[in-house]
Length: 171
Image (cartoon, rainbow, N blue to C red; front, top):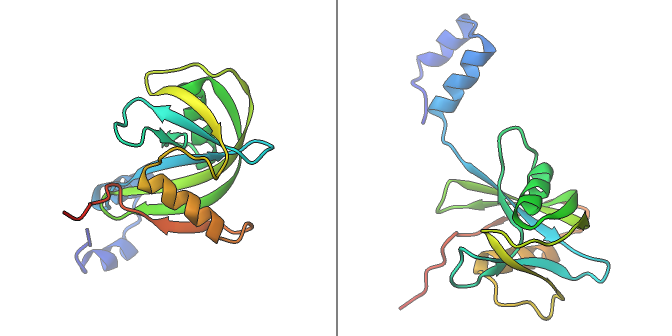
């Protein structure tokens, strides 16, 4: 939403308290969901995948979820994995940032390692598995795209991607 042109000169003359400024900014700007996906690997470079109970086609995917207020993407991944599986991970670095053009969504892909805990199934995750890159189960196109992007970027840079949430199939 764009503000009318007469608002900007007014904002230059009137000092708005920071709390009100941020409240107004929230009201007039688009809202986005902030997601996090984990690329969790072990010493053999195998990828940790969860079997998600709420996905019918392609139930296997990367661990992740939604960020909460005041969380960094690295903190969100650690919390989500702990809540969904009982495993403790240490987030190491941001790998990719992606957008979903057909949804108001921004996704952060974080590299991490398991540092403790014991896997316990939850309402969201029924199984976990470690998979080599050449023996991955069928994954949703979104996850396949993320893994492909990781192989295409320089390892010392944060990459980006754009992926639709739902892939339409031609009839």
